[in-house]
Image 1 (cartoon, rainbow, N blue to C red):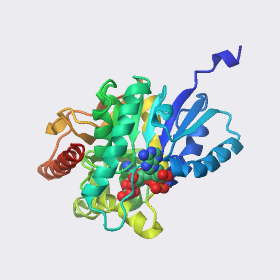
Image 2: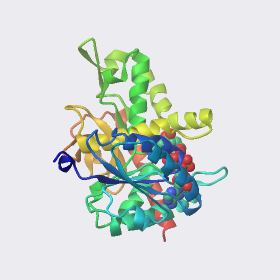
Image 3: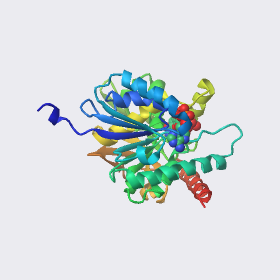
Image 4: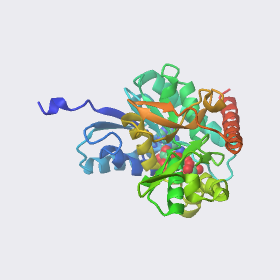
Length: 336
Ligand code: NAD
Ligand code: LMR
């Protein structure tokens, strides 16, 4: 009787499963950090064929992890096997930018990957599948996957800007000498790239029970409209320069935050940032995957409406939109 009370296992696809981010991510999914301590998971791991031997090593480690919630593992290089009946698809694998590669080369390599994966999602995944794209350029790759999966609701396609959101919280906390748990409602607008706009204008901190706007608490607008923004925008590059590899541990952590909040909900009054299909909110035209402040409830996200946008903010929100519109144009040209 006890067993029959268990919820049915969810099928979670992770692509690029033998890569760096996945090495930090898979244990977090298996140990319940993503879906909670009473939700069994079946991992569907997709890799390119020549990496399958290395993926077998990851599978052995997952087996050796003795995770009570990990019900089964599927490891494959066939997208139609990987996405079969998927409840969640976390698209991490992408073609990395190599020295001397032009942006157009990167877009064309990735356009191919996300076309194939979008088509597989369309064909074999559950229609309710929730998709999170992490592989760069994440927003535009997400748009491509969505484009090639017309039978899945558009709003089920999202891209990761939670890492940028968490970075922004971290910078504010550090500046004020408080815990990140005291920092609320920072916003990332736009693209997961150096044009993103990390915005603190509606955020607040709660210190010793007292609520204050981030603006008042920091009391240095020059910093908040200058170094703070560029530090968050360039954080990914700073980590690559320091580590020689792109962020992986923090990316995995942000992926867990994104999916967990989408599924299990955000705390009352708390905004998180998710890149989602633009719907005209804040005068950003439809047709791109744009990071907005959202709240989540009952497995759905809602874009926060009615926030005041200053002239300064408007300029930055439009600039990052324009980059996304350009990326979209270039990506669609690659597919002609
Ligand atoms: P990685 O190179 O260590 O791993 C990527 C893996 O993907 C490799 O094992 C590769 O074989 C695999 N792969 C490539 N093409 C594939 C395909 N068609 N199907 C299945 N697997 C495929 O890279 P990583 O450090 O894990 O990063 C992965 C991606 O995430 C990169 O594009 C990186 O730029 C991006 N990233 C995004 C964010 C974000 O916040 N959105 C943060 C960090 C990194
Ligand atoms: C990050 O934000 O850490 C990565 O997206 C950086 C990158 O270019 O891979």
